[in-house]
Every structure is written in structure tokens, then in C-alpha cells.
Image 1 (cartoon, helix red, strand yellow):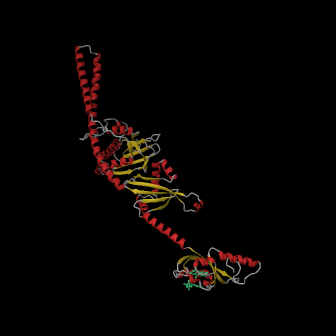
Image 2 (tube, protein in one colour):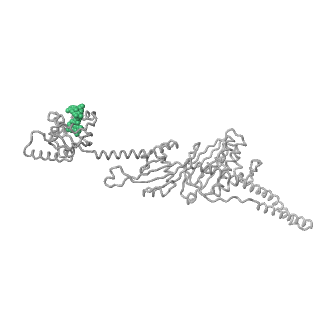
Image 3 (spheres, rainbow, N blue to C red):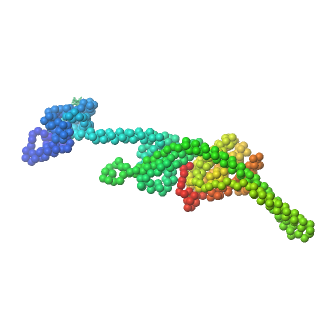
Length: 530
Ligand code: FAD
């Protein structure tokens, strides 16, 4: 016998003798005992020989099957096209590999993984075929089960009501569900996972690496995404679960597998929006209350300021007169002066006693983007009434600031109101308010620009002085000239500075800068996405 690829293999007929016979016996025994079902047929697939494994696989003893056609094994379920391909291949003297549905002698069906190789003689004519097959029903069933399970998992994964993405050790996307792809479109971000990971890494700081190494998990970590422009802010609850998995050969001999992260992003925007609108309403009431208190304080401070002027002059005059207290007349005048001074000081004390106390506020974690956004919302009516276009450009990632939320908001509100007033009063054609935030290693920066008439450079410092104003006071007592002084005081209390940009020519630009303390105390290692 000679296969197409093994020219020296012995022929089936013409039995050898001597050493060749020993070799032949060895071949024969090897084939006989091979752990794969082997059959040798003539050129029409009539069976001439079967080995032990063939009998075990098919149930047919050699004496039952020899002389029969291989088609006897067919379950008649294999499509004709498969047989045609089989025969076309082996007739072309090539080896065929494939799967057929066979029927065991006891009638049970099994899936045969079959290889048929033609055996050619010295003239190149196919004289026989050798067939080798294995019952792979169990493997196939297992494969099918795995496939079904995979389909099931993919279907469940896809129909999850939250965006989910599986990332490998290099944080590259391995698998993502439908909601994740929708999220990518909505955020106009190809790989939202990268954006969330950047935020989570900052938020979780050292814990991130620890969780990754210990295949730990984190749950419901809230992330706010401020997309800027006309796109509304969105909130997500992020959960992540690290696990080790290996689908490569490396794990076959016990090599550790790869680290994977399953990240789920649950959109809680609707819930947060609802909470935000409640919060903004409460805030409006509080702002109104604070403004009332502030205007009373400013009116009293103004009155004290106005009493102080003449009082100082009176005190100076009294001093002069005191040096010439030689006549009786001057003594009498001094007495009157003293009475007036004491009365004035009493009035000041009384006025100070009437001053309403400003509300006290506790320190909390502040997201400046959120604060500015809420301030814009509170001022929406005034902005719309003035036909002012707002360009809101929040930083993608902004450190948390520890401070007093309400005073800081009222400082921002005052600066923005100044910009609105300036544009309204100048009746400029172009009415644009640009608010942007950004952060670097040292500080959080906020810029508030308006397209109004701007402020003369010589007033850039004076504008922060108490009672300095370029505007006439209105009926409501606004423009008392205390607003910027108050805003500066609040900003300074938050380790910040506020100044007018001397280089800005298009209107007025206020630059604010909040220092990040060297120890990182203020930020506590926490970062929040805009
Ligand atoms: P058939 O009429 O036998 O053949 C179906 C189609 O195959 C025909 O339409 C024709 O195109 C082609 N064909 C068949 N015989 C020839 C031929 N001699 N020359 C050219 N074309 C031909 N089949 C199994 O189902 N299970 C097996 O385990 C199996 N093992 C085989 C092992 C070997 C070594 C060989 C050579 C064949 C084996 N076959 C096996 C194929 C088998 O011989 C049959 O072709 C097949 O079972 C289909 O049988 P059938 O009676 O339905 O149709």
C-alpha cells in the first residue's frame, strides 16, 4: 500500500517476506491498534479492512462490514453537496477533511470527523482509499453548549439596561453592549470607557491600582459629565469588577491569565436632574434671602461710611480747637464738639447693632462646574431677557474645591450679573457671555467674559474698593459698589484671586484662580469630571 504522500509504505496486496514482513507486521499492528477508526476501501468505497477502533466506534465487527460500502455508515442526513465535495476532492487525488453524520449499528447517530486520503499505485492511479474518523459528538455537543451559552450571555449582555463594556489589561475594549454603543453616539465619544476610566482613576486615586491587582471591585461611583455648549450635564453611576480570565494557550500549563475589567455605566441623569431642579428652587429662595440681608447690610455699611466722613473731619477740627482751648467760648465749642462726636459714635454703634448677621455656611466639596452651571440656570431669565448668548465651556476634568458653596455662588452670580448689566446698559449689538473653566497642577481657572463696553484699565483695581461704582444706584439699591468687594473677599477666603484681564479688548474679562494647596489638602486627591 502506498499513500500519495508516503511512497515507501507497503502495498496492501503482495505480502512481503523476511525483514519486510516484520516491518509489515509492525505497520499492520499499528494500524490495527491505532486509537482512531481506520478503514481501507477500494476505489468505490467498498470496505476491505477495518481496525479495532472502527468496530468500537461504529458497532460493526469487521466480518459484518467488510465488503459493504462506506455509505452503510451514513445516517442520510448529511447534505448531498458534502458528499459531492468529498468525492470531487478525493477523485482529484487530494485528502478530504470534514464532518459527516453517521449511524451506529445500534441506530444511534454520531458526528464523525473524517479524513479520507487516496492511495495511489506506481502509475499514479488511485487504487484504494484510507478513511480515519473519530466520534466527536460529545465534543460537538460541548462546543454547541458553549456556543449557546455564549449567545445567551451576549443576548443578556446586550439587553442590559445599563451601558457595559469589557476591557482587557491594556484597557482596550473587548466586548461592549448595545447601550454602550448608544452612549458612545450620545456623548460623541468613540471610546467613552477611556473618558470614564480617566475620571475614575483620578477619583479612586491609589485604590484603583489596588483594586486592579487584587481583582477587586467598586460600586456605584457617581460621575458627572459636563459636555458644555448646548449639551446638558449627565450623571452616571459607575461600577467595575476586575477578574482574571485566559483564553490563550499560556494558561494551559498554569500561566496566570489576563486581567479584565467589566465596567458598567448606569445613567442616573433623570434622577439627578429632578434633584437639581429641587435644589435650584431652594437655592433661588436662599439667594433672595441672602440678597435681602446683603442689601440691608450694605445700606447700613453705607450709612456708617457716610457718618465716618464728617465725623473724621469733626474730630480733626476738635483737635485743632483743643490746642486753642484758652477762651471760654472755645471751651464751650469743644463741649459741643464732644457731644456731637459722642452722639455720632453712638449712632454708629446703634447702626452696627442693627446690622443683620450674614448666614453661616459649612465647608463642603464643591464642583465649580456645577456651581457655575447652576448660577447660569438661576440667571436664565435675565440672560434671555437681555438676548445674551451664553457660551459655556467647562473643563473635562476639574478638581474638587473644599469651600462654602453659597458665598461662592453669590460671588459668581455677582460677577455674571455685572457682565449682564454692562451689556444691557451699553446696548451692544453683540451680546455674548463666555464662561470657561480649566485646571492645571496648580490651580482651577475660571474666566467670565462679556462683549460689553469693558472697564478702563485705571479702574481695574479701584473696582474692588468698597462703595466704588461706575453706575447709578437703582431703586432696589443695587450698584452700591459693594458687590465686587464682597466677591473678592469670598474668592480670597477660598485661596483664590480675582482680577480684570488687562489684555482683553473685546469687552470685559474677569479671571479667577483658585490655588490648589501644595499638600493637596483642598482637593483631598479627589477629582470630579466637569
Ligand atoms: P452515493 O451515491 O454513494 O454518493 C453521493 C454522491 O457522492 C454522488 O452524488 C456522487 O457525486 C458522489 N460519489 C459517490 N461515490 C462516488 C464515486 N465512486 N465516484 C465519484 N463520485 C462518487 N460516508 C458516510 O456517510 N460516512 C462515512 O463514514 C464515510 N466514510 C467513507 C470513507 C471512505 C474511505 C470513502 C472513500 C468514502 C466514505 N464515505 C462515507 C462516503 C460514502 O462512500 C458515500 O459516498 C456516502 O455515504 C453517500 O452515500 P449515498 O449512498 O448517500 O450516496
